[in-house]
Amino acid sequence: MAASPHSKSRVSYFYDTDIGNYYYGQGHPMKPHRIRLTHNLLVNYGLFRKMEVYRPHKSTHEDMSLFHSDDYIHFLRTIKPENKDAYRKQMQLFNVGVDCPVFDGLYEFCQLSTGGSLAGARKLNKGNTDVAINWAGGLHHAKKTEASGFCYINDIVLAIIELLKYHPRVLYLDIDIHHGDGVEEAFFLTDRVMTVSFHKYGEYFPGTGDLRDIGCGKGKYYSINFPLRDGIDDQSYESIFMPIMTKVMESYRPSAIVMQCGADSLAGDRLGCFNLSLKGHGNCVKFMMKYNLPLLLLGGGGYTIKNVSRCWTYETAVALGIADELPNDLPFGDFFEYYGPDYKLHISPTNMTNQNPPGYLEAVKTKLFENLRMLPFAPGVEMLDIPDDGPVKVEADEEEKETFETRVRLWQMERKSAVENEFSGSEDEGDERRDERSPPRKRLRPDKKGSSASTEGGDDHATSEDGNDSSTSSSTDSSDVPKMGGITLVTQASASDEDSSTQSQSEGEQTVGDIEVEETIGIGPDSSSNESIAAAEESISKSDDHDDSNSMTPDFYPMLPPARPPPRALERAIISITPVYERESSSDDDD
Image 1 (tube, rainbow, N blue to C red):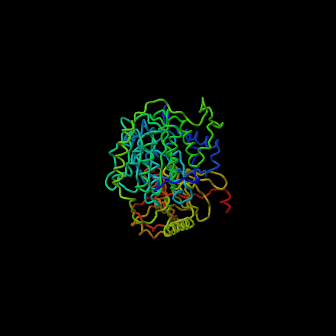
Image 2: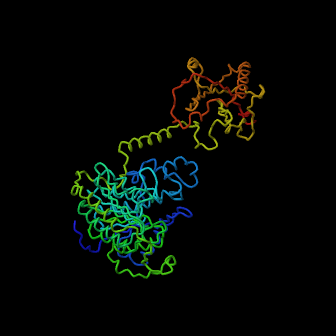
Image 3: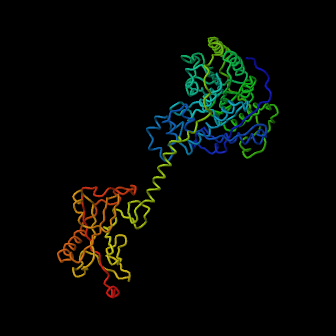
């Protein structure tokens, strides 16, 4: 695949204003604030006018679970600084602690970082842009079930999976000083992704990326690692980068490129040990732009934040094709004081020794050429249906909707058909509801003359129409009991009660909670003997002394529908006999 001069490309830039608010903790080298510095410098240079700027959606649990395990994502979603003491075991399991601390908004930070990379990949898939940029992404150390190297969610792997929906082969290129172990591990067994990494090797994190790590199985020879030593400069880097990548493009012929542009390979980085300038770093991006393939540019490492923002601003200008037009004097902005004392865009390499002699670089380069010759030319891919671009929101089936609507209608009909004066244990009856904390209710019935006497709530007295209270306690004298009146039977019906149908029922009530059947039995003149009245008084006394704590109250069966149960349904009967008093007022005597 021959490189050709590229014309100005359509560039899409993804940035969320909240990304700079997250803080790993005091003394931690990873500072998301660097992304805000980069955006501010882009705006002050006026680069935002030459590209499409987007605020990406947050990635979802379903998005991230395409690579990471559900347990790991759930842990990231749950863990917070306030509750991390309760998750000590899980923190060890998922490698969350010192390098990858728990901080406020951890899960949201992962969502924003991943969301920009996925949005860029989808835009490239649709052909709506040539270059997509997400400087908040590029977290290449995260593994399937654990965090690593300041990285929690591997947005690169997720973006490549998205690109593979449309592209048969994807090239991943990593120019971070650290080896991209998480991405290589994810695609170590496949030929659909080739990983190429130029990194520091030897007693350096993460300790992987040896020259002999070439892939396995179907992915053998599809992992390219160029181990480097301290102090490599622009000239040496260019002498290995361009020949290797030219051979890779000719042999593999990818249809899309993902490039991780970690800025910790720059000179003077807090954790790095390379000696590259902005131009040497940016020339790698410029070289890959010449192939005119869909390109996803991502961030990564970089711990001297003023140099990180300089680097990514310059490489954004490279993607726009105007890097040579960018003035070296920095424009004034909100963070202008960060760039002192020179306030220039480009940085000068240091005088550190280059420990990469030409003989060593040539030997490694020759070995990699031999590995590339072992590759079949442009491996093919089986034709399959293109999956959806994102998680599909499943709507409820029509049958489920109809079932739900039917249940709602039945519930509404049952409420309308509820028996008047029926009680339940629900909370919507206000202070009048009956529950297990209420005292036993004595419900009084009017006699045949129509005199009204009732009790309120659980009160032990009845109030007549003229305001006088008449006591209903068990200590009522027999002389107060009227000769004409009625008694109320409160019964939980049993089968033996069916034989008691000789008594005439004037009215009845039934409830579902304790299957309470109330019957008012009239007492005529012939049945108002002293024995009957004494038996009634004795029953009243027993009923008042009864402990209601173990009785079946309406709360025993909460929220049951107000259906009318069949009479005589239970085996146990509780009979409470309460006299109904007549008013003894002068007006009644006149009547």
